Amino acid sequence: MCLGYPAKVVEILEDGKKAIVDYLGLKKTINVSLIKELAVGDYLLIHSGVAIEKIDEKEAEEIEKLFGEVRDANS
Amino acid sequence: MQTHDAVNNIVNTIKNNIEKIGRQLRIIEVCGTHTVSIYRNGFHTLFKEYIDFISGPGCPVCVTHEGYIDNLIELAKMNYTIYTFGDLLKVPGKSMSLAEAKAKGAKIKIMYSPVDTVENMPENEEAIIAAVGFETTVPAFALSLEKVLEKDLKNVKFACELKTIDQPLKVLLKDHIKVDGLILPGHVATILGVDGFKFVEEFEIPSVISGFEKYDILLSLLSLTQSILDNDFTVKNEYKRVVKKEGNTVAKRYIERFFERTDAYFRGLGLIKGGGLRLKSEYSAFSVQLKYDYESLSNSACRCADVLTGKLKPFECPLFEKVCTPQTPKGACMVSQEGSCNAYFRYGKWK
Figure (cartoon, each protein chain N blue to C red):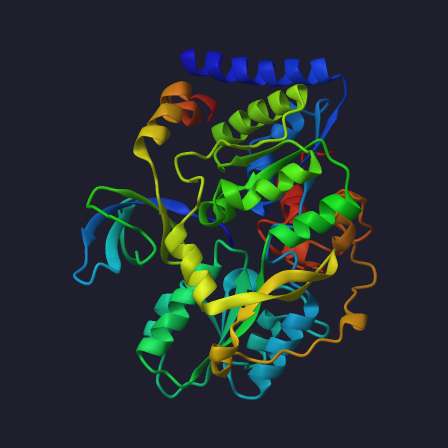
């Protein structure tokens, strides 16, 4: 139940409370009321149809850099 | 090659740290999603001689008791439509699960998003939303109540069985369990922030907020073993890409606006003072009164309670794998994909 997944903002809808996000090619409309200063291209952590936080891309990249393609190497 | 080197270095440093500490560590992962990540990625075998992983009470399905399910089934009999997360369907009530009630014709619908559910609800439906979850999920219910108010819906009520993480953790650490370190739940921390877990420091047990990918777990174990070695009780944050010091302040304000603390019954830990959230009195019109007979809330042979408090490993339960499987779960720890019994069953490398 506490699973979250990352998705990229494709379009912010007019009232700013919703956005269309891309998750592995799947487009979904989600609620973004909890996110401040949202921009197209931001990555969000989605839980139960609601974005609960922005994902800091720099931090995410640093972890990726540290391990390279760890998923591919181990699979 | 570089990848393997980096991973090997971290694995070896973790093992070296534990060798310096000089004993096998007992580490509790509070969140069920961590349990799954640890077992799916084989960390329990990789660190077999080094770390004894214990699964904590942070899976909302696992700590949901049969009394709540019984209440929902009673409400369904009164002709309400029950909206629930799919995880809850197979949790056994006293006589049956929601899935069995649904098969017998009860109006039980699965929801993915509570906000979407409220937005798309048929007007002629008397609906009850089964509000289950820790602080990660509470804002979604707050937003759905806001939507109910905006749309002035009179046909929607919430059956709140929401849990907070701090009180059960305090009870667990004070009365139930001795551990060397804690892996704290990354998505609850997304809402509450690092600050929301500062209370753990009072117990003088090292802890780390962790993400859920395999590299997150490794980095967290590295940080945790270093803290244990240094006797450092500061809550560490290894999920910085998501978790902020202060958490999601907008989400916290939503929770405070609609909810207040209440006592809550946790499977495995019993009734915990301030362990839950209910709607504030000004929203009581949207709240369903649930009735519990706490005395009778125990499932004879099922040992979920002992599993959740680290007293037993899932395979030590007499029901495990024999009559209790993910297809025929007898307790909530087997029902939930994030439950420790379910994880042990699916990634059965304990043998």
